[in-house]
Structures are given as structure tokens and as C-alpha cells.
Length: 275
Image 1 (spheres, helix red, strand yellow):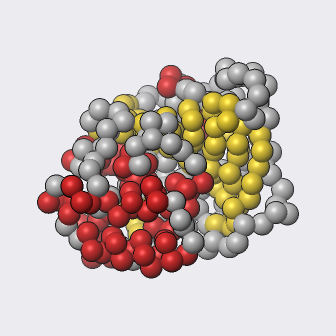
Image 2 (cartoon, rainbow, N blue to C red):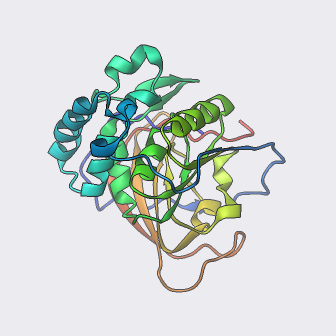
């Protein structure tokens, strides 16, 4: 699955209409692969106690957080600490490492990008997750967003449709000691075997909210997802599943959602297996 390239974010709006949910058909019979980068739930150390490899360019991460993230209103101290700790330059191509801490997305091959640091911080904050929560990421991409969530103490499962990106990300995560399970598959259908999840983060833009993902959320769970047409500005949504009731199996009636618009964004399209 592709990872997002954020090019515009506006203030949150209250007048945007929540996108509709569309029932998916039976998943195509496709081959999927699973790569686990260390024990699920483990996390690399923070900057203060990290290995020399992680310490490298720590000053640039501090400056990135101060200017690009904290300076723009992100106050979640767990998110800020994670982004000071995760070596972003380890998730970009070698020829672009000198630009790893810039205020912009970067290409990672296969027409995909690693998202701007601000959008990673915004989406991580919007999840409102706690250490130990089980999080599903749709769109592993470079692996950077998964690393930030793992650094925050989450149990992270990540699905990527492009095998080369999935393998590369799994290696980078493993090298840094982040316990993230990475699977090559069509992310539209989530990862049912490990459902329900406390949170789901989607890093590419479908034109509707995938119902299989909604139904893999725990009551009270949160999904952060950009939704909108290909080639146009989309809306970043934060959906919260009603606390009432029990976890609903896939194929049943979708749970009640509360929707919050987080503003305008521009992400790469959500890629499907049949495309």
C-alpha cells in the first residue's frame, strides 16, 4: 500500500460531510506475505538511551520537532518524543538522506512517498492511542509512520500492497529494533486475523471509507483516514466507533461512527489488488 504525501493542510472544518461507507465484495484470491520486524510491540529506545545509530542526527530531529511540529500546535508529548527519537533518515533512499528532516514529503520509489513530518505527527496525535494499544496501519510505505507508532509503545500491524516497499520497510524496522508485523496484501480488507484494533491509520486516500476497516475497530476505536477523489484535494477524517455494543464481525451491519473533519489534505490514491 502506498504512503501519503501531504501537500496542504487547512484548519479543521465543521461543515464537511462525512463520506459514505461502501460494502466490499469478497476479497480476491491473492497471495499475501508476512514479514515480522522483531517481536510485535517492542520499541526502540528514546534518543537519550538509544544506540549510536539512532543517536546519529539527533539534533536535526530536535530541530524538526521544534520548528515543524511543536511550532505548529502539536502538543502531544508522546508523539513529540517519538518523532525526536525515530531516525527518519533511515527510512528514505540513500541519495535523499540529506533532505530527510525537511518540511516536505520525499519519494521512496514506485511512485510513492514518505509523508511530511507534520502529517505524521497530526495523524499519530489524532489516533489518541495509549501504550499497548493494537494499531493497524494501511500503507506501510517507507515504514516511518509505523516506527513512530511503535516508538509510542503501540502494538503495530501494517499492510502494504507493494512487495518491494513492504520488504524494505520491514528490514528498516527490524534493523532499528521496532517490533512491527508487516504484511503484503490488499489493505482494503485490513488484517482480520488480528482484529479488533484499538485504532486504524490509513496513509492513502480511497474515494470512500472501506467498511471492512470500520468493522475491525473495537468499540471506542478510532480510524484516521483521508477520503476523496483521485487527483484532487481530500479531507482527513477522524472516525470514532460508538462505545455502545460489542465488536461486530466482518459482514455484519457497520457500527455507528462519529466523524470529525481535520481539514484538507492531498494524499496518493489508495491502491487495490485488482488495479
